[in-house]
Image 1 (cartoon, protein in one colour):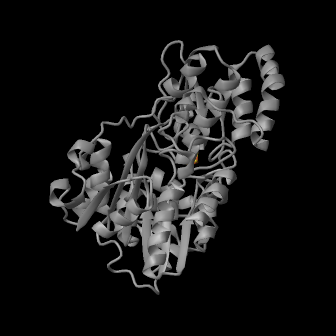
Image 2: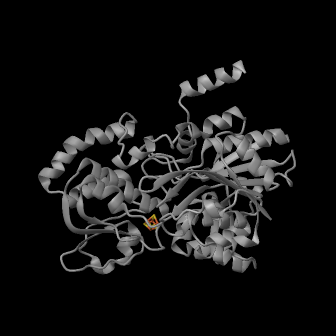
Image 3: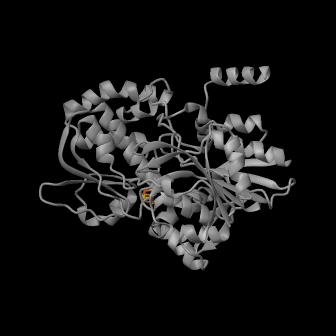
Length: 448
Ligand code: SF4
């Protein structure tokens, strides 16, 4: 099966070329019901830069244009974003990524997969709920982003399908063997075409709160999701065999896990290979930048849900911004099922039900329950646990108006590390152009 690797030239043409080079629409009938599954991990009330975190509306537009040219008119876009973390939900995600406007323009239906209905399926002995619109579509186009991931190293096409599960099943995936279950999910759910959006790529992903986005300008496409992922992983800087779920998928399906086995059309891969870091360092990326010392987050290990970790990190990010330049001695915040190690002089904090359950022996440690704990209670808990009474009162007085304004969308809460996203490499037009930019584009088109 062919994998096309095409440079993004700023226009929708490059997306069309990537589709053509891999024969992407060869099996597509114009009367087919088509479902596009982007990756819109998260969109809450914190204006995190979207680069490398969510699928660009530019790539979705290129796909929609091609589908229309092909004669397709039963097109849906379906995603299920993280919910309950800082107000994140799928509808907000469609707006944040600009996909809502593109969908309107091309008359594509937007579906929030979190709303169901779900069909129960058994995967490896556990019952999971898979969104029916995805199971029932005739042609599934998977559009992940080129990004790294704190648990599985690379998050590409095979992993993007986890967004088609109900919330309980996603949590079960994280608790019962994420990589194995990703493989099984992809036995139950087949993509007809995968297009990796590599206009931007994300180091230390999967979200841009902690992660570091880079411009890459690549589109990788194939009718074979496994081959597409192997090429994507190689471009991120991994041997595909280093990615656990790619190795296992190859074994289950008797496939070589080696990019030399695939036919590549377009660019040569070798000069495109990067060496991106995948392990998150929230201390360096958020806390130390705020001048805070003595606060760390041991790697949560394999058993942690994305929403849980994201909420902890986001809350600590906001807390650090409002309380810069403090020293917390030697404090470690644990989440997920990781066992805490309490060295001399160390202070331990347990975040979420799993951390509390896994560390019964640390009964005296301050903890916040929840699955996951919500953002506002987390912030209050951090204040109460980490700050002296006068500092807490000061934070309440100074920080509360900022938090209220953040929730209301009238305060940006920008972090210093996001300054790099102002560089010319990063272009908002690939997501949600301002209404003014949209209007001038329409005017320009009208004059042509
Ligand atoms: S406590 Fe957190 S890690 Fe554990 S199941 Fe709930 S959300 Fe997932």
